[in-house]
Image 1 (tube, rainbow, N blue to C red):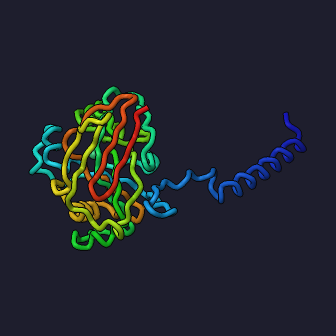
Image 2: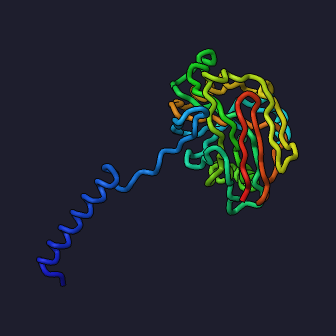
Image 3: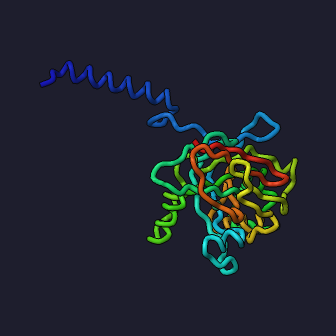
Length: 253
Ligand code: MN
């Protein structure tokens, strides 16, 4: 049995430890994770990322290649976690538990303001800028989830599932409504589309999103991918872009 002296001394040590941990983590029970962020092109400032929303099936030809009728569905949304970002491209580690990882090259919208029930005509005022993103997808796991009526996270929100370029401020590039959306794998064109082919335009997406959720400053919206999605393998070099916005490169490792 511990003596009274030993117990007292143990408790004092515990208290000291608590104080030390508290001051090391600013009042949290442990140090909070770093703020997810993206570079802003042309500045030394970074864009702090709050949430990542993604739009499903927003180009007719992609909806068709996935076996859906593009005309009959309102836009729908899923999320990735901010810490799945691979800022400004680089290495994309091939994820575990999948043998069918697909690329989806997309225009990304970065919000500086949010709100509920934002009218499409007011949407542009909420946008800080635009980027080029890859909605990397474990297609086999997503397919299983669809079949079983389960959520998509396992296919969409795995680690490093959201490579994204630096953000181009709208103050410099405006609000692109047309322009090529493309992706090359090892120098060969795989995805092609045009922003003018979006089933739901960016202002309409913000309108629908803000009717379902309350978008906040720092939120990103992946706006959907054009046709031509397909599998990647280790060693592949992906190079994609959105005309008027920028480009993104990743290497599958
Ligand atoms: Mn997508």
